[in-house]
Amino acid sequence: MITKTLIIIALVIVVLSMLAMLVRVILGPSLADRVVALDAMGLQLMAVIALFSILMDIKYMIVVILLVGILAFLGTAVFSKFMDKGKVIEHDRNHHH
Picture 1 (cartoon, helix red, strand yellow):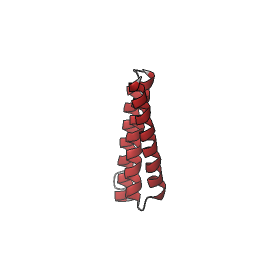
Picture 2 (cartoon, rainbow, N blue to C red):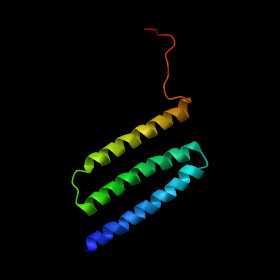
Picture 3 (cartoon, rainbow, N blue to C red):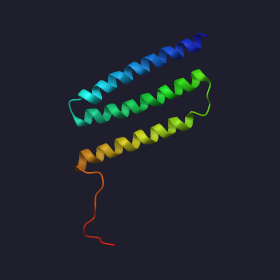
């Protein structure tokens, strides 16, 4: 019983921190701050899924956690490339097929 109460408290704390990160995504002073906040929200979403799966005793949610982690990583990589070069997909104009 006390374990479920602790998990619920942890869920509430993580969800509140996700709301704080959402404020940083919306009001962030720079694009880099917004990218870091989005990446942190991905990690927090993974924590929410893990805590919820423990609470509901669902053992197969690890696949969802891995998928969210992969998507968060790809999103961060794409945003960082956009910040660095100004575009995501580069076309080689010298090499024609």
